[in-house]
Length: 107
Image: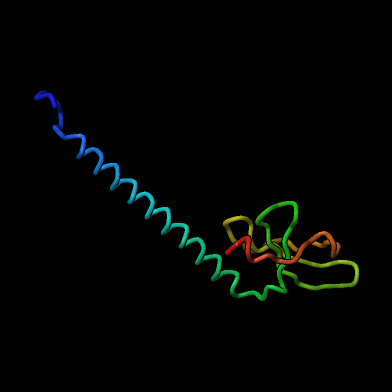
């Protein structure tokens, strides 16, 4: 170490600082991911999984089935990726255009 350094700190001090910084960042990442998972579980817990359908073309888009008729399903979007959708427009699909809800993608 030179005497004219702004903050005299050893190499061990740098290593300890960066190790603690890595632990704090990892802990924050884990806590945020846990919070997101709990929010998804709570949101999807209010629906029966048999009432939900997924779009095979857009990952993360989940619909709630409103009515089922012979040749079509009327659905309303409720979840898009990481956000819930409020007051989504009702849409009509053929039964083969949507796939059943797969909880393993979200939990």
